[in-house]
Image 1 (cartoon, rainbow, N blue to C red):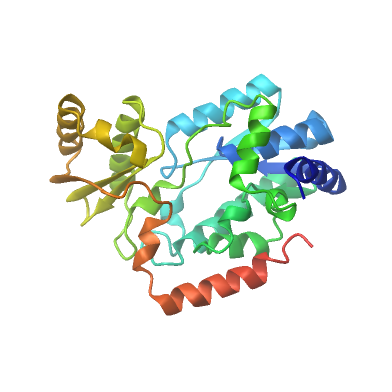
Image 2 (image 1 turned 135 degrees about the vertical axis):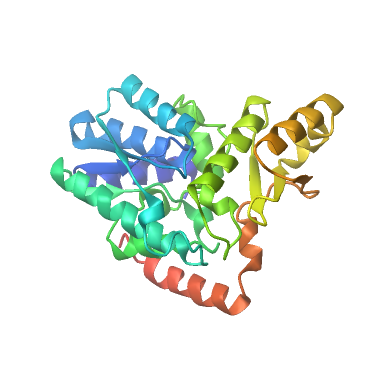
Length: 291
């Protein structure tokens, strides 16, 4: 199907759901999903649900609020304490499964309270095949994934977002701050705050797609940037500013990944047998989630 055909299929699929609560993070994918849901179902049949937690910066929450206010969409912002979720703090390879399961249980409760028939979320076709155990939790709970259901890829989502005039069409990709901590190293609120502050500094300096990986319990900050932006980080003034700021956060060493930003780079440490087992389960369970 062409991108436009997928867009029409998305509208038809949403119509079949009747009313929805959209898990809304203010990212590229969930913003498109929320916008299309509103235009297709009408504002009274759509609810945006946003989790506020230590794993997501305040700027993302504030952007979600601003968008919903501009669009006249009802929004529920609720506090989510991932550190209290069993399996999260110890940060094993299945951390995302436990976190997503708890998160979407809460969102489903909110959807029910507000009379919405289904919970929908914004994963897309590019999420298939990567190590994403959270998709298994989503499928097990019966949460719908409309963008994947109609076969939309990230580039197509950005294209549609641009055509619809959405401010997120060229917004850098973002993910939970816990994904910056190597598996097996304990996640704490202090780590999440440190990572969030470090990444906000890079945002303030104008860097786009980036990550700050927190290694050895805060001893090393490993910066990943879009390869096109790597030369900027080495400009003397910027390098000194970043180094000083990061060390003020408590990092002893500040390093730059020579090959640049790569989504899911922490997954390189997962043993092949674990990767194969989990991705096979993901394909089996998530593949039929919206049938």
